[in-house]
Image 1 (cartoon, rainbow, N blue to C red):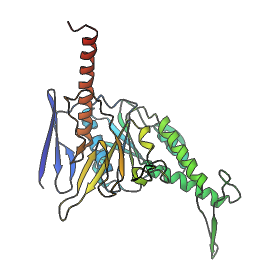
Image 2: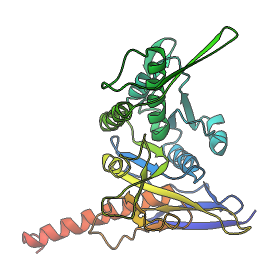
Image 3: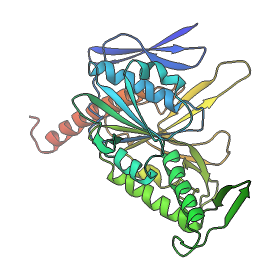
Length: 337
């Protein structure tokens, strides 16, 4: 297995990241770890990408990094995603990541609402599973699955209560009967989509797990009034793709590329860009990089996706921007003499 090392130096400490060339995934090597004050307790980070682009692997990378940084604090992962966790299973087995999964025993709306406040259903009660003394990160996988479960629940309600409607719209219903078995099905209405879209925005804005949070979402294409299309995080439908990023403090896009027999390459984007496959489609990304502090360089594209290095560079940029601003204010106010 070929290993490529990448080193980022900040002051007197450094983090060394190894890359597994066979799978294109980064791993943390035993080394000094740089603190990340940019990860405030209220920060919300969204990582969006296609299925298989490496979102879960990046989540695992950050969880491992923070586990080492904090000398043993774990990440709690609230998930409705059925995509599997093989890429982070070792971290789950070792207690670096704790899973909280949706089992369908309560309505998805309630499960999501409580999860976004750091609570899980345990023995019939809602219990906080986020203790800042032992938990360093709350992860939500994923935003797309959360929305789909809400929409499916509305469809189920329409099937079980065909005379009731949401928003005045009636869903199509269909009943299958065979040898004593009965299956009720129903479609979704425009009102269903609107309700889920409004609710998911409300939940994002009010989410307060008590520690930094990392969210994942699948990308979808939406129409752009100016033309060309937009790729953005998918909830239900496509109407929210351009607007969801503004609800997060940071949004990154991760993508994967293949070339012949070469290993898959995962790239991380920190700026809005044009998608290489959907020509003319814009991908809205917002890393909120300070305009000042240019001495601390931030890569806008990481050819080898690494959310840890991205956050380290953003942290350095914020520190340098503060230093520059402080010096400029002192100069303008005549206090630098």
